[in-house]
Length: 118
Image (cartoon, rainbow, N blue to C red):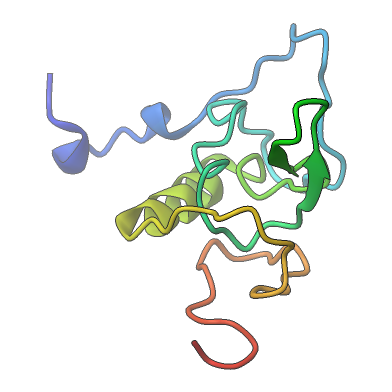
């Protein structure tokens, strides 16, 4: 078995579970639906995906990423997107989303900085 970074077979970057009772869980996916990141690894981090902040019954602020399809839109694209954002993760501090304004881009490259160029 070859290590992931030296193999030409990219099957580990995604799969689609057509038997999932929640399929399709996100609207607007234009490529292969990637179920690999069913639970997004960016949930605890800053990210450009559209989210809203909710307060649960215990007073905890949480991200609701329901409208986001970035981790699901294409095997290679979503893999690249997640890997890029995990290179330098920044913990999410509970604030409303103001730093990034993303219209679900077609490419997998995350924006560096926000509207103010941070």
